[in-house]
Amino acid sequence: MGVSKGKTACGWGVTRWAACVVAIGMSAGGAGAADGTATPTATAAAAAAAMQSGTARPVDRMAQTDTVAENAPPLQTLSTSLDRPWGMAQLPSGDLLITQKGGTLVRVSTAGKLLATVSGVPKVLDVGQGGLLGIAIDPDFAAGENWVYLSYSEPGTGAEARLAGTSVARGRLKGDQLVDLQVIFRQQPKVDSVGHYGSRIVFARDKTVFITTGERMKGQPSQDLAQTLGKVIHLNRDGSLPSNNPSLGATARPGIWSYGHRNIQGAALHPQTGELWVSEHGPQGGDEINIARAGQNYGWPVRSYGCPYGSPVGEACRLGGGKQAPEFVEPLTTWVPLSIAPAGLVFYTGTMFPQWRGQLFSGSLAGQALWRLTLDGDRVVAREKMYGSLGERFRDVVQAQDGALLMVTDGGKLLRLAK
Ligand SMILES: [Ca+2]
Image (cartoon, rainbow, N blue to C red):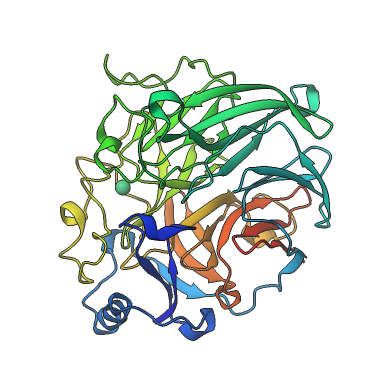
């Protein structure tokens, strides 16, 4: 077990808030130095020692095999000139729409050529983890419902001028302009924080939309149904309420699908079951993969296999003892003792790599890798760390129409994994 490059788990401008301390990417069984040259912190050194001594045992229930990919296909670099790309979606035409954290949306060819900057996007607060974030294309885009959905950090106005919240807007794409912009979701309340905005947008089979959020680094609001912090939200695509949302009581905010989440930066619809799978950031360790099910509580901040930042590495510091059942839903898998900071999530369904069909791919920020998860039903049986030697923070991963996987990195690259 090697300790690799020290990196912030939290993104840009991280010194403003206490929780965004340095996290250390772990390379399971690999040569850690391959990931970078930064000096590990004392916490990281303790983590490495604990792992070697066996005092930080894996979570038994979720024990799976971790390996490092040795013969992964070389990645093709399609572009190195994106500016903090965050989310990516492919249009029926084949072109890619890529959000950039600073507040721009660009159209890029599948060869990586910058074709246009799309105008008409909402104003964002590009501070901390905020910015222009998730993106989705309407499932009926090709049939004339030419909506593009964007999640972003929306600055408050008036009395809320110093506050911000995750919002989702949609606009019709006409040429390279978004028109008829409509805000379909606003997180309540807006708060004074620059972190944990989530957020991904995923369409269900019935063309309703899931929006993943974060708890804005406030913790307890994840358990408060009167707030939409730390929730998965489920809406019709025009922002109205679908008929199949869970009943969570009279004081619950409308639209809540599941709760007890910390910060969800990865989400994908399972190709067979149609359920929403999500990845969420733990604190110091305890990153999770969950199936977000109606009305379920995923435990944050009461339970986590992660520990408060700065805690000695081990099991004693796990929040609430770690184990989440029976009060809360156990994660399908978790990364301990240190976070990989998962971002971007996709089930592989293509024909280019038949051996990967049905598997789950997750980007990783602090962990600087792409993770390939082998599943048996809803059980994660193996995890493989890919491309850890590149030193890239993988922010999003999508499957292209031709079955290749496309990734964007915080360093501004568009990468293609293909035969
Ligand atoms: Ca949890």
